[in-house]
Amino acid sequence: MDYLLKTEPSEYSFADLQHDKVTIWDGVSNPTAVRNLSGMKPGDRLVIYETGDRKSSVGTATVVSVDASNPRKPQVKIKVSEALNITTLAEIKGNKLFATSPLVRQGRLSVVPLTPAQYKFLTSR
Image (tube, rainbow, N blue to C red; front, top):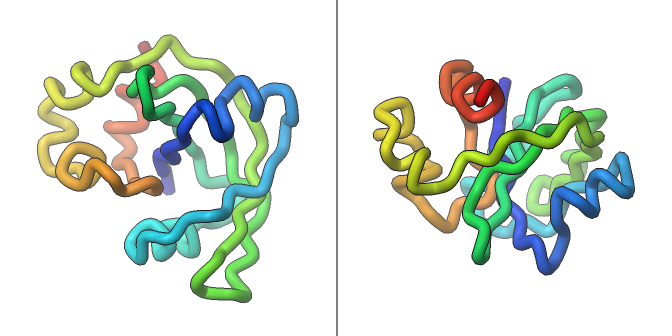
């Protein structure tokens, strides 16, 4: 499965992930986002999206492991993959692939499932 993870770059940026190589993705509180995080499996592909002034997809990562022993606070270990040519929120909203996506319909959702076509659009630019 593919997912998009939103992050505030002033809190933890893709550059931080590139430096760290591996990190634990946690601190998610929205029930839908927590459910999405808990549903991840090792090997799932991730797009990292920076919020704030940037509002763009900026890189990729992969799920290494999932600890969902506390269903309210799952912890997902991810490893960095590669930087992307950025795709802005405006470009995403303008693409029909995302017309029904929670990414544009639920703007505050921090963990969003992606279809294979959406993942390809974000990563092959």
